Image (cartoon, rainbow, N blue to C red; front, side, top):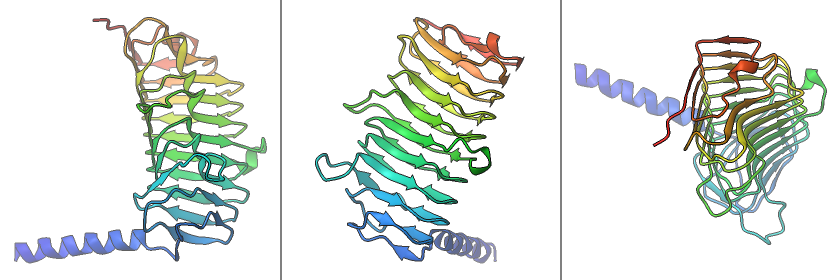
Length: 269
């Protein structure tokens, strides 16, 4: 009897997974634009980028790869959320793009569970400066900088976008200016993000410019050595709770207006 129960649960899980991946339209490998609402998915790897130009679009790459081919008549953006409202991009694997995923002037955009082997900026949100339009959510994404093109201003860049939410994202091996850059992004919420194997040399884990009232809770930042790499920059009125920063020098927690139970430690071999 127990085996039948386990088999039933397994079948139920499979059925649920199948419905979660269901889509209205399988995107043709050469189709570059989505200009109608609906649920779209990929059935194969591709080299062509995707631009979303409509409201209420969901794109599920289902784990397939989008690989940049220089000189292929594209602008180096893997997935571009352009114009419209309420778009979701999930489960994409992006390799080598100047921008892995770019959100331009959209409201309620969600970027979920994507992997970016970055050649430039991993994920960027460029808002409209209209607070009522924004609330981009970046959840569970992974951005790696171990390839030949590993330099960029930021791994995650949020500009002119109110109330962005960043939860459980991972950045590893970043060599640029700021792993996360908040520029005119008020009321940001950063929870459970891991910024690992960052390089020393004047960079920062999280940089905030004209981005008041940020909340940073349970984030981790780690540099290889405690020499010259900052943790937080510009956290003048931020709330900082239970973050762990290793080898950030200085950590920047002193700037936070509310700070509690943060851990900072220098470990040099």
